Amino acid sequence: MNRRLLLYAAALMTPLLIGSGGAQAADKIKVAASFSVLGDMVARIGGDRVEVATFVGPNGDAHVYEPTPGDAKKLLDASVLVVNGLGLEGWMSRLEKSSGFKGKVVTATTGIKTRQMEEEEKGKTRKIIDPHAWQSLANGKVYVQNIRDGLITADPAGKDTYEANTKKYLADIDDLDKEVRASIAKLPPARRKIITTHDAFGYFGATYGMAFIAPEGVSTESEASAKDVAKIIRQIKAEKVPAVFLENVTDHRLLDQIARETGAKLGGTLYSDALSDAKGPASTYLDMFRHNIATLTQALSS
Image (tube, rainbow, N blue to C red; front, side, top):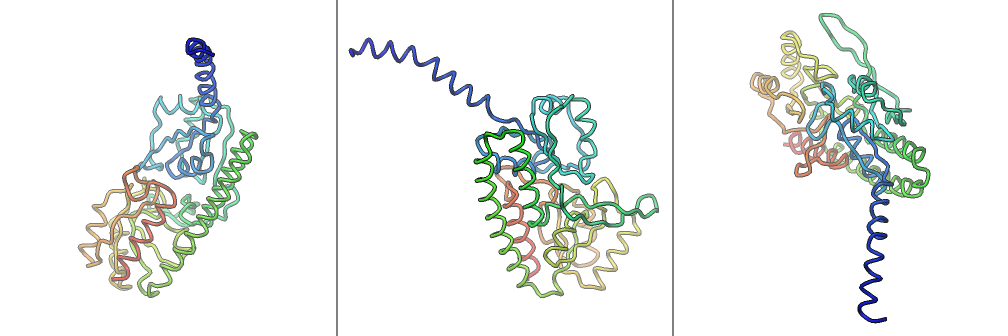
């Protein structure tokens, strides 16, 4: 075959090749995730078979997020919506209604043993469910399995991919859980008490044997009263709590005040309700845990 015939054949094949690549891109399952932790999990499990859109991005606060018209378009285009549930995304039902979403909803916390806690509001105490279940790696495994099952239901052809990615992901979570436990075991029990801005680490504390004290409640929408702050200051002094930690999604001024009045040192920034951006230290779910445990142990060891 001469050179002219080869060029002609290549010209005939080019549209087919372009069309094939475009079909592969179009075949990806579009998945919407409510906030950055879930978005990362979906991307890890789904791999090349999914296209992920996340509503509350890096360093964003899912408690107080206000959806945009662009979010409604993203959700309408999606086949699957992954949410945390447990009252975290109070805005999600409005977004689903306004978008006309008819796809599959995957609630990542399905099957998790939840924590109940008391929160004061306008002088009254009420019991609420703590939505921050991802702050335990054991719960994180439940999230991953629920997302895997939801993706398989929406895209049965991708079952082998989703199962293989999940198997590797669960193994990585198990390995990290061992690292976290080993790091905390090195801390004297008396130093496993810390202050954070809002009550986002209850599952972490219950799982790994640490006491977290927060002037604000489970939601960043709640504000600490002067009485609450005074009580915490007394508690820090009485129990000799060694460190105060900031969070990436909250205002640090209150904790600055508490640190000044008690002498507790500022131990660094923890990632609670959101991941960092790609250039930050906590851009994935597992990196969030690595960063948080390194920050905690460094501050509490000295």
